[in-house]
Amino acid sequence: MFSKSDKPTSTETTTSPAPAPAPAAPKAAGVPSIISSDLKVVGDLESEGDLQIDGQVEGDVRSKNVIIGESAEIKGQISADTVRVCGRVDGEVRADKVVLMKSAQVTGDIVHKSLSIEAGSSFEGNCRRMEAGSGKAAGSDKVQALKPSSAGNAQPAAS
Amino acid sequence: MKAQRLLRDVERRTQARPPVSVRAPEVTCVGPDLVIRGVVEGRGQIEVRGKVEGQVKCREVSVVEGGRIEGSVVAELVQIGGAVEGPVRATTVEITKTARVVGNITHLNLSVEAGAYLEGRRPWRPRPLGDEDEQFTFAETD
Image (cartoon, rainbow over all chains, first blue to last red; front, side, top):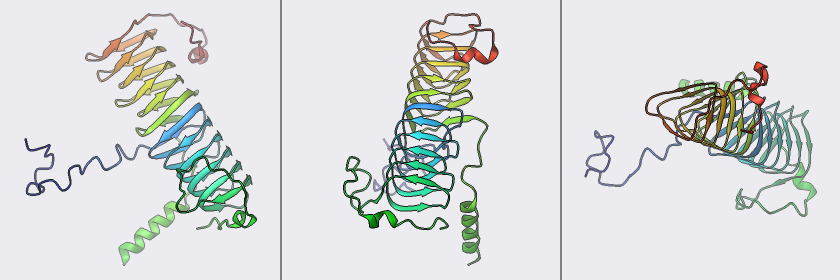
């Protein structure tokens, strides 16, 4: 009858403005996923949360926050909100915020809103800035005519 | 204010920390929000809280309650508290009461807690290979 009142103290008078307060939070937050350095994954990884990869992945990675560790080797596309690369990536990196640390080796295009490249990292490919509207959903639009100016908007790494 | 400054200080310190120096000793954790579609292979330990669709081959595999593997599991030690759909092949298999296993379990040592749901045969097999280290690499042929 009284529709799941698991918090009976405060919200008794309110009828139904906030029907589900709890499920909005990410389920089981705080357990980040780690692919350790001895592990090899041939296939795709998909996550809603944080993901650290220290091992080998042959396939696409889709997540919210991704850290590519120093010992990591990724062959495939990475799309996320935030990507921090310390290892090797062979494929496209597509994220709002891309950070290449000094140990990073990236071969492939980077599509970003904000990019920082630390001195010492190696990067081979085009980088292009995502328009505000396009977002990650536009997964298929390729870099066609890269303007030379768009490759030079890297910010200094020490932010 | 003081509290704000303290907070900023903590923030700066956590950002300045090197990003990947903290590495657990070869333990892979598939978090509850992670889905892996493909073959997972390693020589260490893997803890599945999320979902793996494909084969898992590791030294130690533990499927925590809420975790799920849809595919075969080959390991030295397998602990199952979650769901496994597919053949399990390991020297030692430990199944707790929250587990749900659909598939054959080929084992040398098997322990099952009361309440576990098991579907399939559970053939006993002697050690497939003499070398301790090689055991978890044995072939999938049954």
